[in-house]
Every structure is written in C-alpha cells, then in structure tokens.
Image (tube, rainbow, N blue to C red; front, side, top):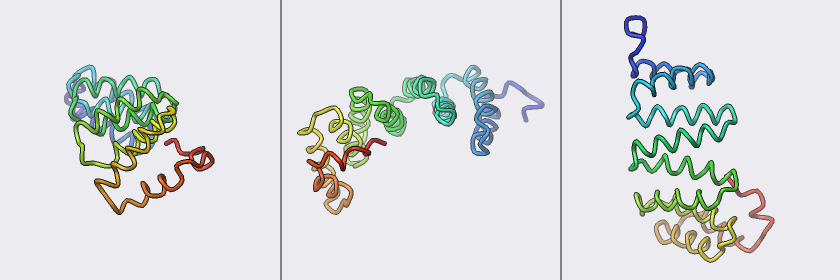
Length: 165
C-alpha cells in the first residue's frame, strides 16, 4: 500500500506499529512521525510515538507526544494514566496527581486512578489524601487485596521506598 501511496498516514501508522511490536523503535518513530505530519488528528499515532520514545528512555519526547495525544482526544483515560505514570516515576507528583484526577473524573468507578493518585499523594507528602484514595478503592472494590496491603503498611516507610511505578 505504501509503495502506491507513500503518503498514506494510516498505512504508515500500521507499519510503524508493526515496527514497534518487533522492537524496532527507531524505524517505528520514523513512520509514526511522518504519519503524524499527514494526520495530526489521530491520538493513537502520538500514543505509539510516546511508547517508542519510552523504549528509547526519552521521557521528554514521550511526554510531549502524550500531551499532543491528550489535546487530540481529551476523553481517553488511558492517555492520562500513561502520562501520569511517567510523571510519577520522574518524581513530578503534582503533574501526576493532576492526570490521575482527570482520569478519575472521566471514569470515577475505576480503581486504577485512585491507586496511582494515592501513590502520587503519598510521595508528595499528602498522606491524608493518599489514604483517602486507598479507602476509595475499597469502597469501589471491597475485596481489593492491593489496597488492603497498602493500607496495612501505610506508615511503614520501607514498604513505600520502592513503590513508584
């Protein structure tokens, strides 16, 4: 398809995604960058670009592409989760909390947003808000073992030392 039309953004996106799944991030980026210039309204292109840049340990370009993806598709909770997690592992807790809060507003009955926001609050020193988020998880899912474990170990600094994802 690309041989007939080298400017087919969908074909470039598909090939870029195939390159990504085959571990060829640089080739994937080349196709996805070209596709994004041809179709700037496809949030999936920017999401895969972000994933490829993460694979190359370039969090700044990953964040840039996720921000564009969110501008294109403000209703996709997974984009907020992904960007929030990148902020979280880079100790940008305020930004992470903002993204997880947006994801919670979009999908208030999903425990993931509360879990990650609670982790962000904990590391930002907002212990009360963190604990509240873990209790929110148990309100939504009373049998949630992870939330129970986190609450049982809430005051143990050693438990939290490695708990940034």
